[in-house]
Image (cartoon, rainbow, N blue to C red; front, side, top):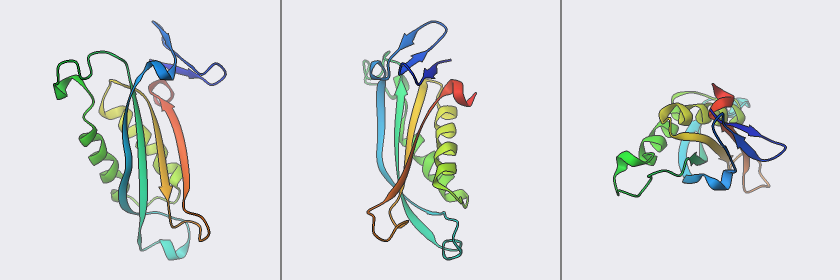
Length: 143
C-alpha cells in the first residue's frame, strides 16, 4: 500500500516509490449534485448545489491499451457512488463530505492508489463565486 510523504512529494510503497505525475489520472470534473449540507438553520431543510471534482490516481498499467472497460476504473460507477452518497446524508461540513467521498472512491476500486476530492459550495458566501475544500488521501492513509 502506498504512503504519501508530504516532505518529498513521493508515494512510498513497499515495492516501489513513485511521484504523483508518474500515475495516470482519471478525472471527474464539476459533478453537479443537489444535497443537504450546512450548519446554519436556513440550510437544514434545503438542497444546495455542490460541485464535486475527483482525481483518481492509478498505476500506469494496461488502462486503455485494449479498449476494454475491464482494464480501467469505470468513472460512471465512481460518479454514481459520489452522487448517491452525497444525496443520502445531511452533512454539516464539506470537509466531512470530501473525506467520506475519498474513502468511497478508494473502496470502490483497488486500482485507485490515491484520490483528490474537491467539494465546491457555490452558495456558501454571498461575495464569493464559491467556497471549496480539497483533500488528498492515499489508500494507506485510509486503511
